[in-house]
Amino acid sequence: MLKKMGEAVARVARKVNETVESGSDTLDLAECKLVAFPIGLYKVLRNVTDQIQLITLANNELKSLTSKFMTTFCQLRELRLEGNFLHRLPNEVSTLQHLKAIDLSRNQFRDFPEQLTTLPALETINLEENDIVGRGRQILPESHSCTLAFIKRSPPERSLCCPPRLGAQMPTKTSGSPSLDVHTAVPASPCCTE
Image 1 (cartoon, rainbow, N blue to C red):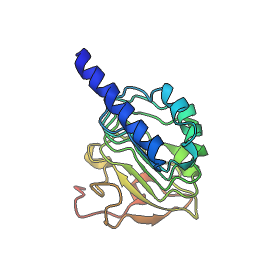
Image 2: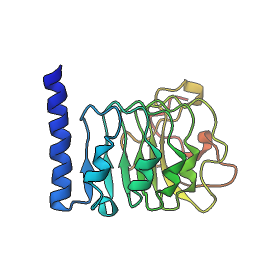
Image 3: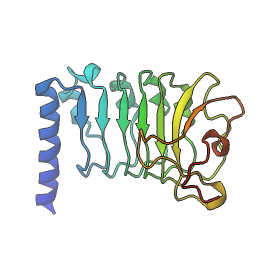
Image 4: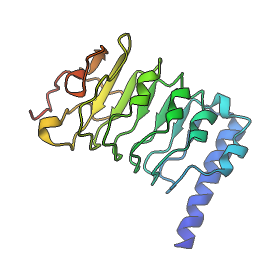
């Protein structure tokens, strides 16, 4: 077990060093067995946080993200968090004013993360394979246009079956309106079972 932990730490260090040394706009920490975003990385990345536009933390074991994560990487354009154990986002996600896409698929959300409705640049939200059970009140502001992917494993009477991955070309483009809810936000796709 210690050998596997050592390998995971080495993988994270290697990926972070690649980002810092190359001046890349991408930080890819997918499949690194992370249970939290390592606090020590804030210091290592401090000179490049403003240029990072894509962070991938997919397929880890994250249960939450901190407000510090959101405020540190405020220039993000895309955040990939699929395949974790997240059930909510911190309120500080509202600081991600440049965020265009967020993938929250295969997590443990039971409610639509309404903080996302405040993000003016947001174009794509993937919540596929979460257990969202309630109806959303107001999904998106009136002038907001966003692609939504929802809920494969929720009960059939409350499910929408949408694109299999972020950015898929299925008919899910919608303009928000004050009375929009989860069930009417996305036109029915061919894979729906209702």
